[in-house]
Image (cartoon, rainbow, N blue to C red):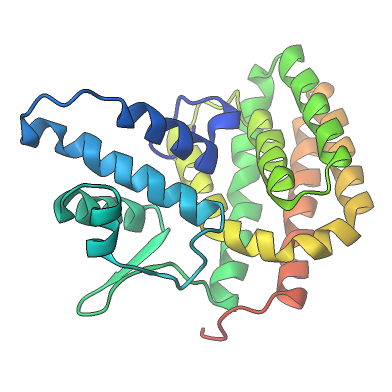
Amino acid sequence: MCGFALGAPPDECGAVAAERRATVNSKVPTTGIAEPLQPVASMRVADILAERILSGKLPPGARIKQDELADELNTSRIPVRDALRILESRGLVTLRANIGARVTRMTHRDLALAYEIRERIEPLLLAESIPHLTDEDVAEMRRIQVEIEATSDIEEFLALDRRFHWTSYGGHRAPQLAQIIERLWDTTQSYRRAYYPVERDRARAIYAEHHLFLEAIERRDADTATAVLVMHIRRTRVAHQTHLVVDKGS
């Protein structure tokens, strides 16, 4: 379901999956045969960079210097270059000839369009998922919601909110659709972080929407659940447009 690991459980989406895969890949033994290990090295670098981007350590517009990164990770420029191409395909990095690599920066229009697309296609993924969700999935969403309402930490909130929604999508049978949606989540992550103080002030509305969402899923009422999801995404889109400062380009 998640990016390059579509079979991963919901709590391993995005930054969490990147951190886990980076740890696993770093333990791959060296055989002394460079070529077969190149994809492993590239994925390891990609996972490390993705975690830094999604966690906010590398903000939108930050320059990524290939030489410095290769030295830091004790690797050659080849896996770094390949990793940047992987992240470009995920929308996390922008590559420009004679300029280099930077963390992707979104304009107002980019951000609005990302949420407009989510409004239209995310309900399709939810509708695909609901018939296959179990009572344990619903119970897990309730446990996550309790944690959401108990936290005041931005990083914990973002991780829990992501787990909440991707647990609801866990029954899908549409990996390509899930991959598209995860890309939209990833590319807007930094802006959700910037928007968090506004979301915290509107916490009651978020909690109320989550509870309505949960109740509909518990009844396996796909029509109501998808309607609540559209409302939830749209409210966030409108608030982003009102409160966030991003590039003014079209």
